[in-house]
Image 1: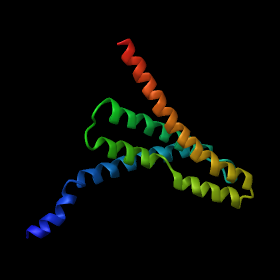
Image 2: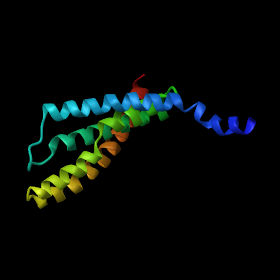
Image 3: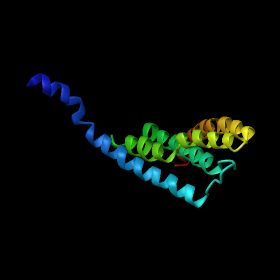
Image 4: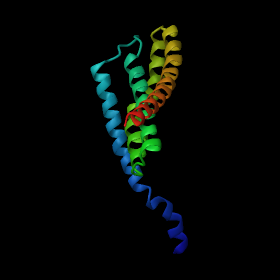
Length: 145
């Protein structure tokens, strides 16, 4: 009996995490779907909405990570809910891959290669810029207070 309890113990504290990731993911994916409805990408055109969603989501992730790791201790479910759930569901690197395939299938290999390069570079730049900008704003705030 003790052996079974020991094996089950690691999962006991994970159910709330799984729950907040699932709820956050549903919210983020719904927001991404809403963006695609507001700014649809037609068959062979450049997927600007996917790029924007990924860049904005990565920038928000940068701000979130500074805020919950350097500014204030957050509840243990904040990072899984907001980071993995909401922002993980919002950003869409799987759609990015499908967009590249669609561009190639539509006979636009140059746009596909551009998308292949611009999206990860834009996402990385967004995270870096958001982290750097958030830290700078926080430092400015500390100096003026």
